[in-house]
Length: 260
Ligand SMILES: C[S@@+](CC[C@H](N)C(=O)[O-])C[C@H]1O[C@@H](n2cnc3c(N)ncnc32)[C@H](O)[C@@H]1O
Image (cartoon, rainbow, N blue to C red; front, side, top):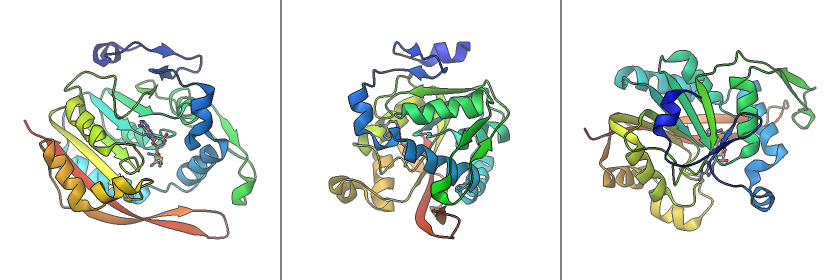
């Protein structure tokens, strides 16, 4: 376990046999209520990210943002990292020391660990998408670390992250205000937060409070984080099958910096 990780965590954790660091007890009942613990959702992540590279266009825009506003430092944090593909791509492209992915799905995190830390060959049945079974293997990277933790109550010290990103999470959490409060707390002064969201809220209350770019920017401003680039809107295509069916997510990309 690298020293940098020991130095930034504020809560006790266990490391499960697969290597995922577990910061809270997720009972079988909690897992049963969480759609992101379902195998079908894992297959969907694998198909959209590893077969189709759904975020290639977002990554291109993001790399321009990072190159323009590159915060020098050690730690990249991704909240709601899913199966960890974007964090892995960042680790290949930018020389930080340590990359921490946080999610609330144990199933996603275990896959992230296998793919991107252990470099294990993993085979998936993808018949529902019209494909034969597919195998994936990446070169493992031990500077990545995956944790089961709550993005609205992060087990991390203040001012610890240099770059923080979250894709398709803002509209999924139960309380976006808590999320942004935590982002401000764990980002170091001058640190950068990159956020991609299609504003596809699951709760009407959250949609009313935070459901457009002005409201999102207002929320970041409330926590002293100001935009450092014009908002970018990208149509992100999520392939549904080999017949060419797809969903188009009208994705808004923002970059904010925490006040020095
Ligand atoms: C729509 S998925 C997006 C996953 C990935 N970022 C992507 O864009 O493909 C939302 C992710 O956020 C995670 N999540 C939802 N609420 C969370 C919370 N409070 N803390 C940590 N992760 C959370 C889910 O488990 C899921 O992996």
